[in-house]
Image 1: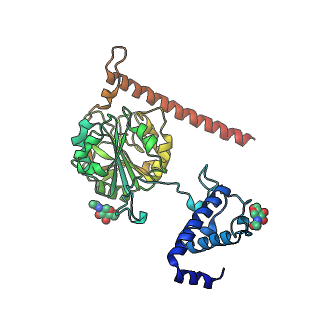
Image 2: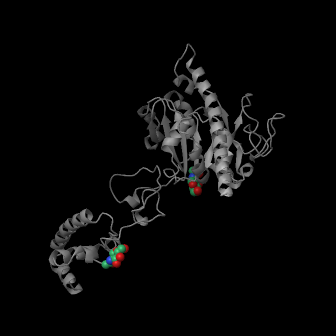
Image 3: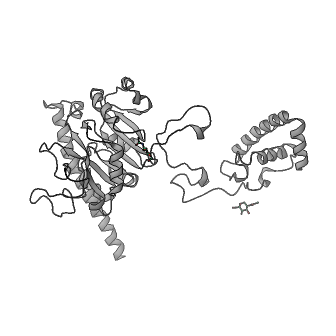
Length: 382
Ligand SMILES: *[C@@H]1O[C@H](CO)[C@@H](O)[C@H](O)[C@H]1NC(C)=O
Ligand SMILES: *[C@@H]1O[C@H](CO)[C@@H](O)[C@H](O)[C@H]1NC(C)=O
């Protein structure tokens, strides 16, 4: 079929041609898809080569003698195998592989490329119960529209949040009676939140009167912090020295603890350390930290001491932002989600589990280190 014929057809009967080619294309596409699920379709990618694909379809239809296997670029026996593709996707041509995602809301109509007026670069999650709505409303207002807002609901109440305008475009994930780290492990896989430069994974009981998220990010970038938290006020005696707010500076990266508490001034709790109530991770840091979170150790106790394993050098890239600070209100909301056992109050059971998880996490990490070193030594001997 020459180009002259093609042009003539277009001029004389455009709509008939479109109908014919569409129909043939559909039939051909079905045939092709059914016959060669793994072949490379380079030559007939839509839409840039739409015309040529339709011509191929016509050729096939009009000349039964042409066999599909003879169409250039399509070879029945050459299957795709790309070892550098993500695990499990090796049979796909790399350019179709979408290995990362985001929480951007899309329309159900129109051109997908025009769905988004904005692609927020930062993500903030709060683990919430409806009782804390006033606090969360105040907190969300400290985050500009450069943030995607995700709420993890542990009390099953979600639609009631729509009394706040921002709730209507927030992401709501509702699973009863789970913890922040349980949600983070399940719903914030690094590939799923890959669109975001920084990720805030926050508790619900934080006072944010003296906090502005945009300014916080500016400081984190300026001081090269991969893992950080805002300084805490007031000093209620429960917090570590490291996370207490200092009034005289923008950020700090080390501190002095009580005598004997720090074996090394560059190690936790004197440096390379933030707590787990209001951490902020860079994309790269989160990619590591997510792997450190254990599926069953839902309270995350002990994680704070291990965060440094994800960052090099940790004492320079983990720190506390003093000039954007928060108040830890210490509302033991999670405790009320526990269960009364052996005559003890629910919060006592929760607290006890936090402690045993801490010990368990430490011993798992120590054992993992030991196993790794043993393997290295064995390899050296061989
Ligand atoms: C089809 O692929 C196989 C294996 O990759 C190759 O040996 C063969 O030459 C190819 N045939 C054509 C017609 O390209
Ligand atoms: C959002 O981010 C852009 C680009 O970094 C910045 O120019 C803008 O000021 C930010 N918006 C707010 C409300 O801070």
